[in-house]
Length: 537
Image (cartoon, helix red, strand yellow):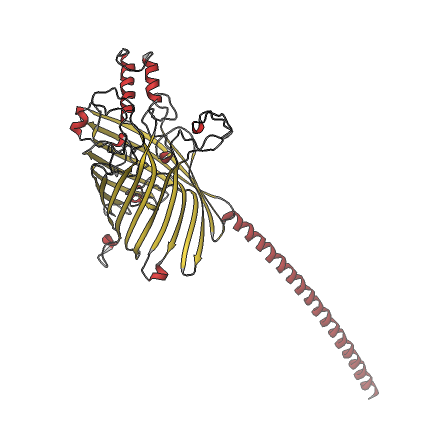
C-alpha cells in the first residue's frame, strides 16, 4: 500500500511538473505568435507603403502630372486639275507628309494643358528650291492663319497651345481657355476629315487663331437638352515693332527713339475677332447650333498694285523692258519696285452668321443603317463693312481703276452681302465592315466670303467657292482607329472669281467672261482626287 501511494505521489508530482512545463511552452508559444503577428503587421505596413509609393509613381508616369504624347501621321497623294476660263487646262500629282504631335497634361482635375506641333511638307524639294514653298507677291500661303495647313518646309510649328479650366457657377458648368487654339476642322468640316469635332462651325471658319474662349452649359438651368453658349475672341494680327528696335519712322516721327513692341502707325492695325456660338438644342441625336462674329481691320491688296506687279513680272520675263512703264531702271529693278509697292491694306470689317441643323442618327428604330447615318444642312451669311480709307495707286493695265479711288472690300465701296448653303450626309458603306461613305454639296453667292483658308483641299477651299462644289469620300478603318485610309473626290465649279482671295481688290467677284476680257487667268473649275493612309496613336 505504501508502495502504491509512493508511486501515486511520484506520478502526481510528474504530472504536475509536466503541466507546469506545458504551461510554460504555451506561454512561450503565445509570445512567439505575438512576435510573429507584430512582425507580420510591420511587414504588411511596409508592403502597403511600398505599394502606395509604387502606385503614386505609376500615377505620375501615366496620369496627368506629366505631358503625354500622341502621334498622327498622314501620307497622302492628290491628283489635282484645273480648267481656266479661257479653256486651257492644267494638272499635277502631289505627294505629301503631314505629322501632328499632340501634348496633354492634367495636373489637376479642373485644369488641363493641351498642345500640338505640326509638320506639313510635300515630298522632296520644291521646283524653285525654296524650301519655305511660299508664294511671292499676292500669296497667302505663309500667313499665320494657315501656317500648318499649307505645305511648307521641314519646320515643325505650333498648331495648338492652350490651357483650359473647368469650373462651376452653381448649376452652370463652364470652361475657360486661352492660347493658340486652332479653329480648324470644326463642326461639319470634321466629318470629311475623320477628325474629332472642334467648336467653331467649319462652314465659315477654318483657320488657325490665337485667343480665348468661355463656354457655359445651360441645360440644367433652362431644362433644354444640350443648351450652351460660348464666347470666342481672338487676334489674327498684332501691330507691334520688333523687340530692341529703334525705328526711325515709327508713327511717322522719325525720332529714332527706342520703341520696341510699340504700335507702328505705318503698318496695318490689329486684326481682332469677337463672337459667340449658341446651341439652343442638343439631345445627342438632333442638334441646332448657331455662330455669330465680327472681325475688325481685315486686310487685302490694292488691285492696281497687283496689276502693276503682274505687268512688271511679264515684262521682266519677256526680256524686253517696256519704255511706257512708269518705273525706272532695268526689268528686274522694275519688278522689285512694283512688288515693294504691293502691300496689305486695311480695308474694313466683316460680320458672319451661321445656322446649322445636324442629325446624328436618323429617326428612331429604323435600323442600324439609319442609326449610324449623320446628316446636316447649314446656312451662312457674310456682310462687309468697308472703311474706304486706303486708296489705289496708279494702275498700268488697261481698264485699271483711277488712282486715288478707295480700295473698299471685295471690289466694292459699299457693304455687300454673301450667302452660302452647305449640305451633307455620312453613312455606313455597307459593302465593307466599318467603312463610311460621305456626300457633300455647297453653294456660294457672288459676294460670299468665308474664313476657310485652312481647309484641307489642295485646290483651295471648297466652302469658300462662289459657285458650286460637290464631294464624295470613303473612309475605311484598316486597324481600327490606329490605321485608316480615305479616298476623296472634290469638284469646284466657279461662277465668280476671287473666292480664295483676302478682303480687298483681290477678292473682287468677276464672271468668267469678265475675267477673260480683262486678261486674267481665272480658274473656271478645279478637281482634287485624294487618297491617304493615316496612323494615329
